[in-house]
Image 1 (cartoon, rainbow, N blue to C red):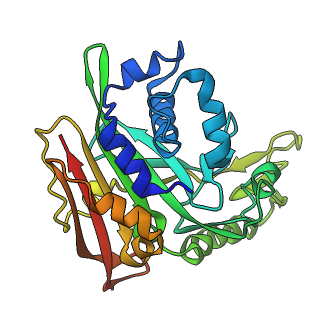
Image 2: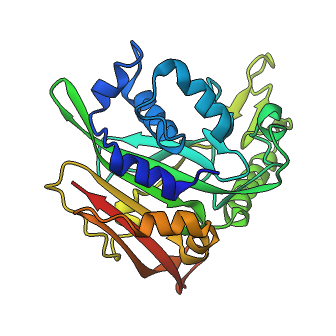
Length: 285
């Protein structure tokens, strides 16, 4: 079963920071799609595979791959984690999550998950990994400068915090007098708002979260803006120890310049005064 440790090793052994050349594998592929494709290939250990053989590799590794719909997640490892993929062009910008609030875990009863994903394997709860690519434009090229791999329980608060805010907003909307509301999966829907009763108002949430470089600026990640490409992975130490001994031995045996694994204390997303031991894995070239 593949995991983040094996994906990191695959990228170290097969660095592909030039998204333009990677996107040329399939014509008209956007850079965002090329980044998602790179993440998918890293977990499937398929970066150097022939295109015709990749679907078989994907079928072995993933139980779900999102196609065109906007529902979470982007990728689901068989009997493993789910992965959300985001690409931005700045080290200080916010991550656009659209209608999905940030998640510490993904639950199968989430109403945004489509039935095919919910039923692709037997599951009720999965750890969620955010794969965030930071790129910079260089004329015709768009280089992947930094790949952040962060588990949701290091990054986002528990769902009760976000659901509570969402419910309060929805309740406030429904409490407005002289409007006719209806049930919706969005924040609210107000019907018949005009004298002819022909206009409705849909109220949607657009969630954003701060970039990990600002959230984890208190950590020693060894980030170097002069480097061509860097990986920064953050996970709870308990998560790291949950991986097989073979996976941990494999990643710990990597001996190349710019690679490092250490343990640091991160702030608990539910209570910032509590510190949690976390594994920080970095690589830079």
